[in-house]
Length: 130
Image 1 (cartoon, one colour):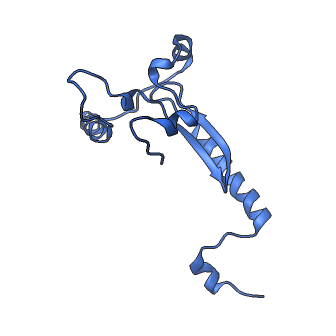
Image 2 (cartoon, rainbow, N blue to C red):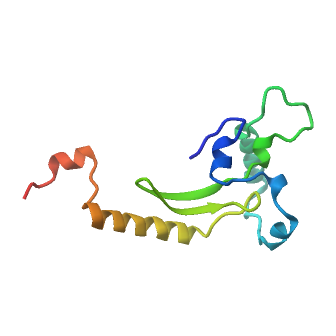
Image 3 (spheres, rainbow, N blue to C red):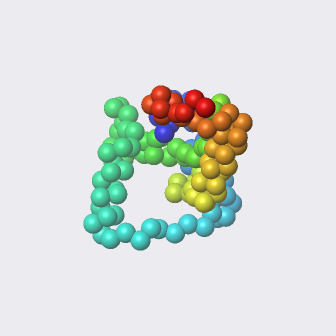
């Protein structure tokens, strides 16, 4: 999870844009559908969005916080290497989850083949030394 301050410099450094920077042709190209949620689930969702949305203290009523307009993305990182990056084109846009999981699994297999099996400290205490 990436957490940034109100300057959004970390988001900008990885190429994430604001929704206000997206060109209208890009918006038209994205096919989205709303999740199937009950009324209660939608109310819970909107309540949670309001709790986690970054709202500056000096914000005026009716203004839209920059954090709400900021687009995010998805990364798969293996060691120090970014092996997959997806930048959301519009709010609610997301990568194909199967592709993300497949890339993560492949990165783990490649890393394990190169470095041997990864063990945490506890596992290494009980590993056979044969």
